[in-house]
Length: 119
Figure 1 (cartoon, rainbow, N blue to C red):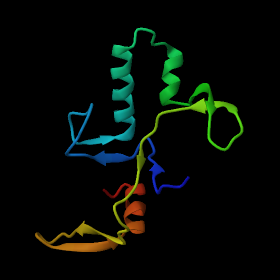
Figure 2: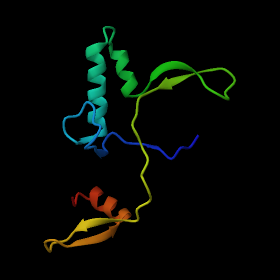
Figure 3: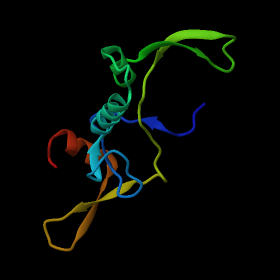
Figure 4: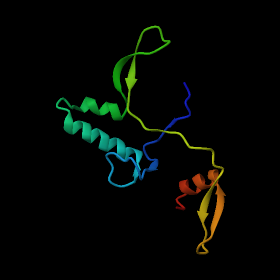
């Protein structure tokens, strides 16, 4: 079922200034949130083990009874964050060297600049 959400990578960054949980800073990496979640669960769970870390890494071995599969399936499960954009935005504002002025730049170019370390 495609609901428009896509998994976020561990190195991607979120800004959440409302409804935050676990994070004191509104800007954080996905991996930082997942680490904080794992730590919180660890503090409250008496039976935490190294195997429990699999919920947040390669996946915990389990069986799942899923709709339309005809029975139990063996596999792995893990906790991830997903994101869906509000609407499609073709251009994002870019800071200009002139104070108070904004330029626009295609999103694809912004990602290339980020990969090249320009920001």
